[in-house]
Length: 340
Ligand code: OGA
Ligand code: NI
Image 1 (tube, rainbow, N blue to C red):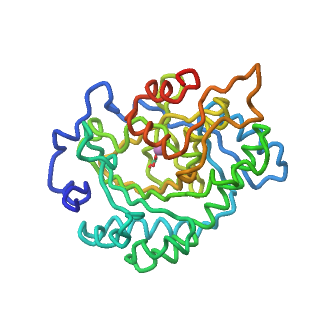
Image 2: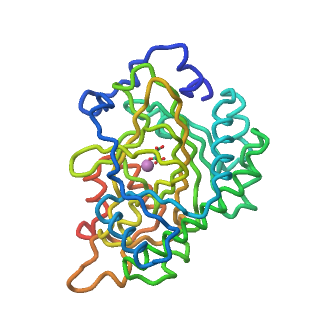
């Protein structure tokens, strides 16, 4: 595995054939995509909570994406976390593998591509470090010990980001009109951290860091570095998400689309590469436990608003998500209440 990591070989080679996407999926020239102020920016520091709730709700309906500023996670902690994430991906492939082999149950892993390298049609220009976060006392012993500050810094970081996540879910619950405790019973108990690394690519017009996808989570709180690369698919067009210093990018995942009975959108997005700069990002996915039931909130369903999705356990959702392998329509059909 360590030799397959993109960061292990990309400096010495042109783009291999297996990394070249078919023309209709290629990102084309970066210049074709507007990097505007299109994604709403929500200031969590204002006093008017009603305004925050409304802004988040509207952004979640129309874009499935927003950025948050004045969110309470200290700047220095974001800087420290980004430093150790970059240090991790700068280590040798061998060291990365050793540092991610501490748990026989594989709650911490390093991989390349889509996590299913052997089966994917086109490889992604991305390496990933993925681990569980909660309960921290249970999982921290399996996190990397190198870089030496990893556990300390990431322990603090994930604790703070988790608190922010609960705050955002609270705002979302209020916007939807569902009970404030909705996310406290298993739905948000299993957060995972994914540290993505996209090395510079000799020809970014041919490759993708991540293909078009929706996250199989409730929400994702993304620490995006200063390097551009994330694009959102809205109204049949790609729009770029402009990096804002010390902001987090928040997006709605497929599970929240189900819970909200389709009111909120699990937005499709992808990641493009660039030729000059390595890009490192950290996704904090708020996920349910495997045995938690996923279904539209009862208060959003009545005779006039029938459930669009059927109930299923999170682990069964994941099986369907993986089986659909990026085909949105196939997944919608597999989850729809009318196919029961
Ligand atoms: C993800 C994701 C975006 C990025 O990890 O699912 O979409 O910019 N990441 O790395
Ligand atoms: Ni994503």
